[in-house]
Length: 257
Image 1 (spheres, rainbow, N blue to C red):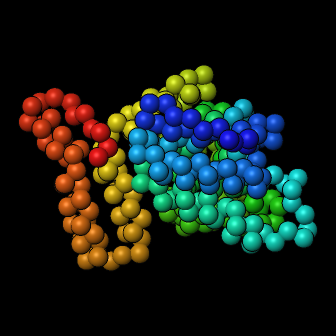
Image 2 (tube, helix red, strand yellow):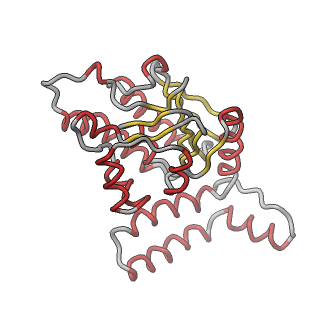
């Protein structure tokens, strides 16, 4: 079904692998479209409780494939038709999404990673705001997510200087959730995603939703949204299981409902 990406499920975790390793998994129109199709599928699969996005070979994603760029390209329309819908679909997922950054994440590849909820990095990976090096501005949600993750001043610095960010620096800035040795990277990502997928998925979705809303809400609005969300979470099977497990002094077995 797919030619530029791979999609599989492992237990209750979905895995999307960008699969153009010879081109450092650079985006093409086909890859954008296949990503949108895969994300749509994931949104409908109730048995998937966590999504991992990673790259094949030595890169996560190097951004747009510059071989397809010419002087007549309308960059704004490319974003509106290809990248923006992909990022919007990703943002709408109410399951946790993990970027497993196995190698370089540059340009729109970095934007894709920023749009995920967690960023796990290999110690051989790197992040690059590459847009400035070809006279462009960060896009695909980059200028939305970056300052929210690390603050305005540091976001401005990274976007304008375009310097390579090491895993250690990414961890220090708060861009990376955790950094793992490349030799055990796949195993660590699997372990992390399995742990997340076994948590109360309904509550996680509500946390994602209302954290996003908080940026455009005042305190009174958020207090009401928290009350509304807590009513939903309080009626979930996972909440009942959590209470029973606490009373019975055992580990809870959440089912994501």
